[in-house]
Image (cartoon, rainbow, N blue to C red; front, top):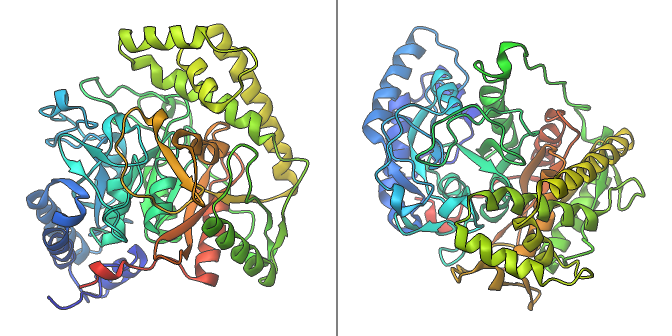
Length: 490
């Protein structure tokens, strides 16, 4: 099969080609379907295929284009994370007992994608309960990283990141509470944006069999994934905005413009170390190269600041609040066991594992205290962003690691420069933006010596999502961006 010029193209290029009649929406969709049929038996990214309806949508898009249609995603093939309801397709979240659950209606984000002309090819694989940085479950199996199939593509939006890296559509929808957008982007060399908390309504991103009621679940967001920063901004504009049956009754969205449009005008605080977890040599070196490049391009780059909120405190509060949220659905026996273990903790044990255990059994009184600490940290972030426009830091301490499905996760170890560290402690980097609800854009900046992507995240001010997105776009333009995996280039 000859190489297609469209398989790894950006939405900007695809839209221009569609309008110029260089290609049709049906041809783009057939190209993406062909790639999935040729390669996905190895990658296992697209776990639910919807090709017949995708081709119907593509034919409708071609008709709309012939009549002058200008919808922002008109004719663009894409995927959505399995956890989003798509009418007529299964939504399982990896739960075997829900393998026959079929959504009756589209999630609100999916409605908006369809209204914008997007062509949905299918749904992408996830870990059980969206609770891992690896994407595997008993229903759909294991998704591999297109750069090394023996390694994780990330999670919980790992099927989406793998699909993007493999050329299975130009966009995807994902979600994030523990780095589930940003970590897969980092591991697969693509782009993702964790929006400001509450910016994108999550109705219909609901674990089965619960009804898709409007709700902003604490810490959790949905967001766009793509192969370019500009495409992230395009998809964000499609899915952002109030839920019309909830806060949209009274409010309308009006995001501010990016603070700057030139790289030389940005004031950046760049971090490469964390007090509770080391940064691997490959990631550290990529950040140093980026810092040098930004400085050479005229940006102001600072390596430390007293304005930065305490990262150790941030991590401990985040662990408590995250596990308090996640544990609400734990079975009674598991919760009882956690209660017994937490009761045996020493009051002086402030390890992250201890904080997670305390979080599982957190009382409402203690949750309110933790929330007050979060409010204080948010105030510190507001002060920091008076002096800086963005904070650039790692997404995770290493590139993608080999599959490790050992349970429980607390017993797993991640090797950082050959030394083992608790697997779940890696939450410290995603938590920097998640706890205060700040926007964060993940983008690729380098390849490791063994051919694995390395990314960073750009954390921006509250509701100033266009600022980290613009900075990511400028970095992409200045230093290069997505590089397709050689093994999957036809």
